[in-house]
Image (cartoon, rainbow, N blue to C red):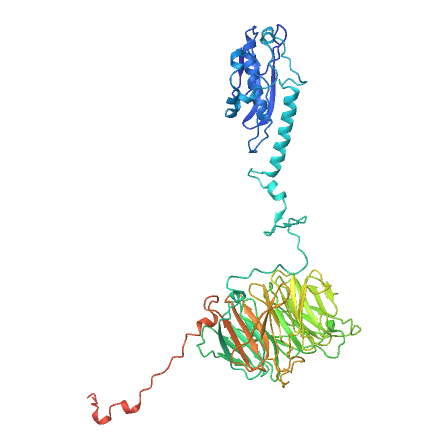
Amino acid sequence: MLSFASNTFAGVKMGSVDVMLGAFRFLGVGRGLGEVEVEISHSVHHSLAHTYAEEAGKMDELQAMLSSGFGKRHRPHPNKAQAARIGPQPPAAASSVKKDEDDDDDDDDEVAGERPSSAAVASGSKPTTTTQDDDGLTEEDRKRNAELDRLAAEDSDDDDDDDDDDDDDARPRGNGKGKEVARNGDGDDKDEIGPPPPPAIAEGGEDASLPISHEAHLRDHTKSVTALAVDIPGARIATGASDYDVKLWDFGGMTSTFRPFTTFEPAGPYLLNDLAFSPSSQSLLVISATAQAKIYDREGKTQLAITKKGDVYLRDMRHTAGHVAEITCGSWHPTESSVFMTASADSSVRFWDAENIQKHKSIIVVKSKTERGTRTRISAATFSHDGRTLATACADGAVHLWATNSSFARPNASVEGAHSRGTETSSVAWSRDNRHFATRGGMGDDTVKLWDARSLKKPLAVHVDLLSASAQTNVIFSNDEQHLLTGTAGSAPPDEDGIQRGSKGSGKSGGIVVLSRTDLSTVRTFTPSGVNPSTSIIKLQWHPKINQLFASTSQGSVSIFYSPTLSARGALLCVDRHVRSRVTIPTSEFTSAAQMTIIVPA
């Protein structure tokens, strides 16, 4: 008598007349297949042969299930040849039934190979097969099954339908343009050194991304506006000019007349070189053409701090407490809210803590190779957006990259002759991915160059003949970073604030030039309204939150370009806000005293 566990499989080894009593365990892994166990409790007689045949058929079916693997769903394949069931042969007439029934019923195709005779089964002997293994398959069936296994393996490599992502992650990923992107050991895409692919032109042409359909003006300075800053929310503007004044403007309080709410003179008769709001927008860094930087509160009423002035008699800049020459530019650290940087004509960059400004935190001293190790004027310096790198541009034409977590003993990367020597490179601008930066050459160089921070051997692209007439002319990335913008100089003669005649293109008016980030080709050029042909465009700032473009001019004004549909807040708050007028009633309309009845209390 045979007894089975609920999830067991029975297998019996038959002798000639006796049955070997015992128990064995068959373990397998497959879909829904657990531990298999059989127990034979006592002697069996020859009628066990028929039961053996039925159970052997079950064994064949379970073995077929084992070959399909675990946890995978495969596409249907042609059925393999399986072992013949051991048992009585069907009648001869049944074997001659029409063969076309096999097309729709897979079970008909399962039985293949040579069947043992019923006499062999009745005698209790082991059924014979044409193969070495006791599976009931012929050599021809084995070859056919091997071919089907090979096809199934190929199919499983190409079609991963399970819930895990292992196979999908191992495949190379496409870049959306029919090309495969190689991957490095960290799983990140390997970035090719070079400019980004050309951007797709939005519907409506290039102008679809430029909010320049409307324009407002800030007019209160009397000379060139050389410094410009907008706070983080895009609510307040600071402007500095060659008239020595800093003016603060507030969109929330201005009307359509666009007037500043305060004006102050931070350093007497010194030009303004740079302005920068702190990351909290509560402080304003003011850089005048002196050796000391100042910090004012948001309202411009209180001076919060001032940097130390260095000893001009010390030759080693590392030993001075502060700058000993004019500060050319400054900016706040992107991630450390109280830290800011100043760069100077004394060949040094100093890092300060606004909460403890008695002495600089650290210092970079730049030594010029072209000047035989002597000082060189640092004309521009800018943090990358993550704050990990500082780029400096010098009057000797060199550009240096410094890791901000280093000792600043030497730059991490340099390119000598990035711009013409002595032309005072006026601006460095980083892309948001911190991999590319652009530089703006000064008067006589008149170029914009795009660089890859990972390889400074040569620029990615160059645009020439962009006239510059100010040491503060800058270059910026557009809000979507698909374009670069810079201002160009008009043909105005030099005046006391430093604006000079361009070296090329006499009579050509200045404007705002939009360049493609891919190759720095010109996309378009436009000029602020209300300016004369000799006006130069100096400072540009494209604010990301309000999506408005600010442009300062040598005429003493700032143009604000915006779009009613693409921009938000900012100038839009003021254009329809009119000045409240007081109603004055002419005295002739009052009733004369003779006609008035005056009631005097008793």
